[in-house]
Length: 72
Image (cartoon, rainbow, N blue to C red; front, side, top):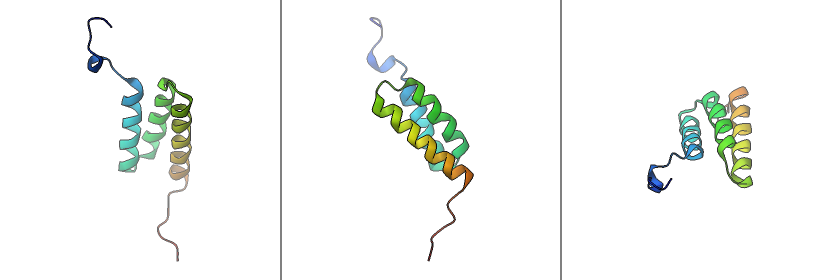
């Protein structure tokens, strides 16, 4: 790493967590589930691992049973 700037180092956790967030925003929960799972593998802290697990569980829930709109 001595020849590289910090900006040149690929951050796999950031890549996958950003991909997961974008997929969620588009409503592509299947892709989000896969991306959160990948991000979890690269998370360096327990807090980030738990975040990925919880987002993945949320996406699984919405994928299986989408929100139906406002209730009265």
